[in-house]
Image (tube, rainbow, N blue to C red; front, side, top):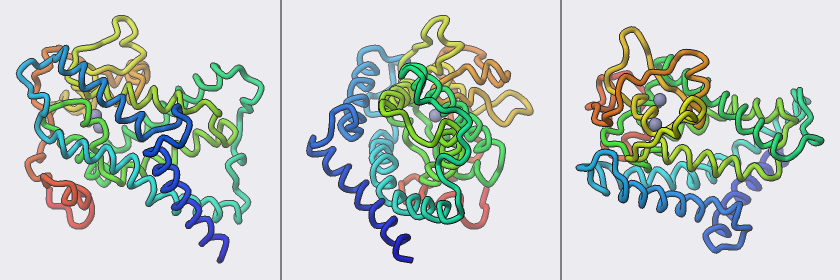
Amino acid sequence: MEIYWDAFINGFNGTLNYTWRSILFQVPWYTNYFWGLISISLIVWLLEFLFPWRKDQSVFRTDFWLDAFYMFFNFFVFAIVIQGIYNLLGVGFRELGITAQSFAVLHLNHWPIWAQLLLFFVLLDFVQWLTHIALHKFPLLWRFHQVHHSVKEMGFAAHLRYHWMENILYKPLKTLGVMLLGGFEPEQAYMVHFAAITIGHLNHANIKLTYGPLKYILNNPVMHLYHHAYELPKGSFGVNFGISLSLWDYLFKTNHLPEDSGTITLGYDGDTKMPKGFWGQSLHGFGKRKG
Ligand SMILES: [Zn+2]
Ligand SMILES: [Zn+2]
């Protein structure tokens, strides 16, 4: 029993310490997600200010501060709380003989670093695209994902407005993805994580950006705005599910971009019932279904 308790405490303390040391600049700059997230946010915010797509949208748009709070909550507070539980599960699986290396189909050690990182990025993005579709398809999961779709005015910080359950729901396939690649992240995986944060921030930013012909590969603000559209094509449960890459939507024909004015209504049928504050939204999705 003690190894479980130790794993739990070590996970909790380890993440808490790392976050604290990040705030104090005591970790290598390239793995400092705390100041990294703040820097990326300030840069994208400045770009929104300089090159706004919807010119009449306030720099402090509706729910700006709520979303700013979500950013720190989902990235740091929740990560600290949950790491102990993940470590505990890790011990449980190890006791059953399942380790991070059990399902390895590829051994990347001898690949060049750039190829390791590229594969890591593409595979992780694909499993997240699949998870995102599940969040839209299954009513029980959609209730949690509604929090992200309750954004009525789009700006970069909306990227990290999502129900804390999503952290958990994305985890199984992400873990499986890492396991298939040998069970460990490449040492330079921080590059992939920072790229994903930047692309995600831009996807939600009030900037008209499509990357030219690269739009068929990279997700972008124009495409993702239509993921948040109130009106969906008839009979569909969602479009443009891409996270960092739009490629999967083009490959599997879930892409949809009827126009690019940027002024469409956002949300979903029933979004007026979404609680306005963080705590109400955190409980949304549990209990009896009210609509
Ligand atoms: Zn969605
Ligand atoms: Zn979004």
